[in-house]
Figure 1 (cartoon, rainbow over the protein chains, first blue to last red):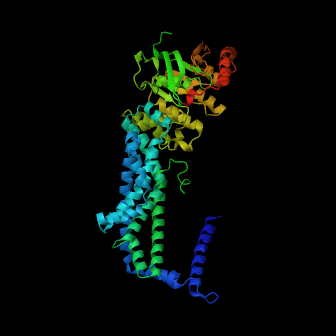
Figure 2 (figure 1 turned 180 degrees about the horizontal axis):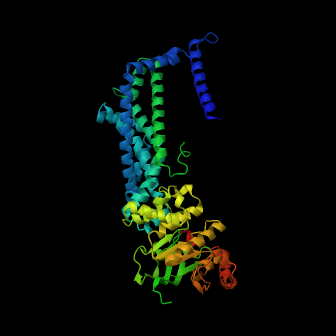
Figure 3 (figure 1 turned 90 degrees about the vertical axis):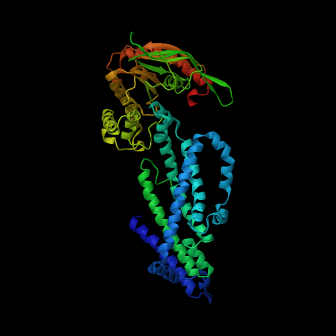
Length: 262
Length: 272
């Protein structure tokens, strides 16, 4: 299938979906409207809402807040994950002592922490960042831990025989290996940073995409909820494309960098 | 030979603690010395601990008893005089061929620009001048071995330890690599300890062939000088009458050990 045909078919799916949505929301079938506008709105209203947000410019502030929260959550969570992952992998005794607690915290559905963070950090961005950090941290932590643990014995011995000191092994062997594992989970961890931000906003905030959706829901403005969801998915897809670009640059040395991600 | 001894294993015994807690003796009371400039090949059946012996010479493994001397100094920790060519892929997958070769110098503190320049020269001398920017996964098995060879040789080690380095390659590539190795080696005649299970390869390359018995508790059971003239061409030398005579003689001893190792079904010490 050529690129153009594929694109055309993909577009067709969207068009058919939207037409059907519009049709069943406005034309009665056997005397009933299958998608009552009160619950399902319709594409025209949703589009109008999105256009209104962008034309008046209110959306930019919310997008910016969500983006900023996601970035902070990702940066802080990754940094913490890399450092602790490295530390645990190089100090098996420390890892063994903390193991049950790491498992316990990781088993906890992170959403229940949101109220605590709101209490501790207030309604501003930091409670959302904190929620995102708890999600990102564990993904990065587990990957870096694996990455350092699973450095090939031969490659390590080779480094030693080439005369590398501990520090040089760190820089030339452990670090690249750990980073490659971290980058292989980049899509997941960036995604979770956004999830943390949006869920946090949804549960209590004064700005952001989650807030927008929550506000619309509060006044039964279904068009607003759907509009918020569309903007949110477009936002995540854009971020994901950015991640793919970064990944291609950083993982050129890996044979299956592009095939491996799910 | 009046040459000084590069590596000497004296009465060296190596043992491992295996999974069920028993002690597995891989190599028992091995005496082995490699003179400076000498090319020694160790041949033995699978699992006879020949790689183990090499790891002891490299300082990657500590012997249970016996001594290891490098240029008459007892070996402490890793053997800093030695370069090691591994059987498995040991290149850094995240570095290009050029960076993989240059790293040996950078580790020693050579400025990066100079290291890269000399690495480029080395890549050219192993026939990969045009592949500097490739990552290991973009190279064939034989090309990766060439890079690995350059990576080791750029540091100019006095001793070269090689663990079935051409084992995973196909027959033709092995011969080409053998010739390349001899060509590079003849330039400055390092002491070489070359482990292989291929007797033909051993005779074609080495000055002396050492045969090990089947494991466990394998020991060295024979030493043969290879009198074939140098420089040798591996393709040609195999047709030589003396080559065949020597091969028949050594194989007579080796065959019994190979049969024994199959009969035992002994746990492979090389897997540890």
